[in-house]
Image (cartoon, rainbow, N blue to C red; front, side, top):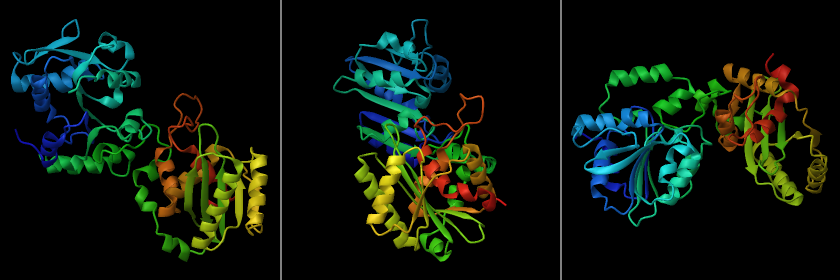
Length: 406
C-alpha cells in the first residue's frame, strides 16, 4: 500500500468525530479510504448501524465498492442487495443514496456507529442534518470525501463551523503517483478558468454560471498594493453604500477613477451587520475617514436610493464629522447587466484593479453567478453570494461607465 505523505497523515491523525478530505479530483482523496473503511468496519462493536452514503447507490458501487472488491475480493466485499444492504468484511452495512431525503428514511431513528460518505456535496442537506443526530454512540464517527462546490454550499458552512472535525484539503499536486505529463496537460487545459481553482487547486469556487469568468479564473492578476494605488493619484474617489436588511449586510466600497478614465480601482471595502441607524452613521463616517487617511480624499458618496431616511442620516453624520464637503447622492442604479458588462470589459482590458483593503470585492466577483432559474439573464441574489458588495462597487462607477469603457 503506497501512500502519499498527506494520506499517511490522515491515516495516523484523523481520529475526530468527523474526518473529512476535500479538494481536487485525482488528488488521492479516496484511495486511502479503501483501506480505512475496512479498518473502521472491522473495529465496530455492534453498538449501532454501519452505513455507506453516496450520491446514489450506483455511485457507491462505482466509486467505493468496485475498487474495494478488486483489492479484497467478492468474499469480503459483496454487492448491494434489493434491501439496500451489503456484506462487508462479514458485517451488514446499509448502502444508500443521499441525493434525496426519502432515500435514507429506513435508517431514521437508529443509532449509527460508523458512517462513510462519498461525494458529500451532492447530498440533500436534510440527509446530512439527520445524520448528525444519528451518530449517537460513544464511539460514533464519520469518514468522508468531497470535491468542493460553491463557497456558499451548506457543507462548506459545516466545515467552517468549529465542530469536531479533522479536515484535509487536497490539490492535484498532493498526489505524487500521477504521471507528471498528465498533471501538466490538465493544468494547461484549465488555466485561466474557475475550473483550475476547483479541479486543480481544490478550492470552493463558483464554477457553473460564473459571471466574471476572466476575473474569477485569475483574481490575483488584478491585485495591486495599497502603495501603488496611492501613487496613482485618482481624480475621483467615490464611496458606494448598499444598505442591508433582514438577510443582507451593509456594504461599503471606495473606488478610484483617474482623470483620463483609463481604469478603475476598488480601493477599500467592508461589510457590516445591520443595526440601528446611529451605528450605521458611525460606520460610514469611520469608513470614509479611513479612505481619506489612506488615499487622500473622498469626493462623492453614492447611496442606495431606496432608503431616504438612512441617506439623510448619513449626510448629517458626515456634516457633524466636518466632512460635509463630500457630496452625498442617490445611486443612479443603472441596469444591473449594464454594470456587469462594464466590469467585465474592464477585466478583459486589464483596466480593473483592487487592493488588499478591498478583499470583499474580490470575493464577490469570484462567486457571482447567473440565476439559472430565470429565463432572462439575471444575477443570482439568494444570499449565497455577496451581491451587496457588487452593488456598492457599481454605485461608485456607474455614472462614468461610458467613459471607462470608451
